[in-house]
Amino acid sequence: MMQGLLYPRQKAGKGQFKIYIGMSAGVGKSYRMLQEAHAMLRQGVNVQIAYIETHGRKETEALLEGLPVIPRRQVFYKGKMLDELDLNAVLLLAPEWVIVDELAHSNIPGSKNEKRWQDVMDLLQAGINVISAVNIQHMESINHQVKTITGVDVQERVPDSMLQIADEVVNIDLTADELITRLKEGKIYDRSKVEGALRNFFQAEKILQLRELALREVTSQVERKVESEVPRSQQMRHERFMACISSNQTIAQKVIRKTARLAAYYHGEWFVLYVQTPRENAGRIKLSDQRHLINNLKLATELGAEVIRRQDGDIVEAIMQTAVEKDITTICIGKPHISLFGIILRTDIFSRLLKTTSTREIDLVILS
Image 1 (cartoon, helix red, strand yellow):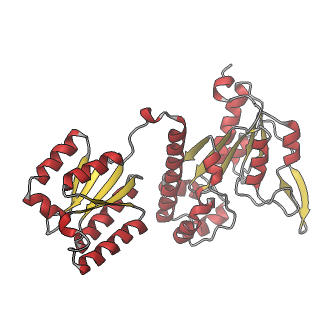
Image 2: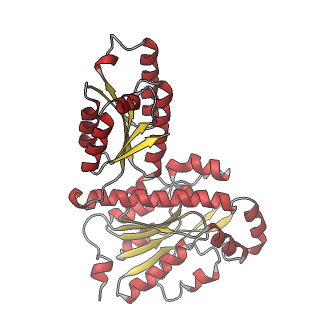
């Protein structure tokens, strides 16, 4: 048996936590969880279904056959008999692993916890390992972005901390075309709801943006795990950008904005460096240039940069010292003008900068 390697036994303290995340309903999160439960059973793991939502999908319902299911708690609420996760039953049975679907679900009033993610926290604290699932639109921090994309204000939300404490986050990914095809085939909703879904949520441009959000979230979680579990000496080097600016208003703004976009694209940290030479000290710099400089440094801060100011007559030395201190991978400078780069071109600074960056494997980017 291999369950000791793939699925750790219960142990004292917090249980293991795995989340399947997707860009929308219908990508196959519940289906994949049930497939995993079958694989666990074959390996002799004590896994039980605490809560699964099939949404009437025949393929998903078929996978329930042969899996041990913990009966749900039935509650009469507002004239209807509703099913809920039976938290007490799961805690009493204490299986090694449980499947708990619909992480963002709001519990019926009167339940021990208001939200299902809080039930999951109770299970983890009891040492029970949990596999759960959530759609990206339910994450708290991107609620505003989701509303902008879809026009829907999602009410059931999960705190981002749930992803941060997860031992593993797996993205269930489909292309927009694949998801829309599944919808048209009646594999997501009843056929009577398909046309309405195509006019609203299930539009290619919306799905594509939600897909990007899901991929970003999983990437961030993987990066956090690498930082916490892989020795720093063995980690891949992450991109770190440094924009070098002068007091010139127009050039500096362009360098700052383009470096910000580069950093965002590569999910990297970035810095803005201003080297104050003797000719630009407080007593000699023009008031207009000083005002532009302050505004540009404020812009850099607003865009998420760490601003660094240094006083040095040797611009290259100041740039390279800062690059080494901050472990910079890419230095960004502006196109030739009466600016820092203009000074570089008129002296031997440019050749020195090229030579120094090449020996330290730092890229030098000239921004138009």
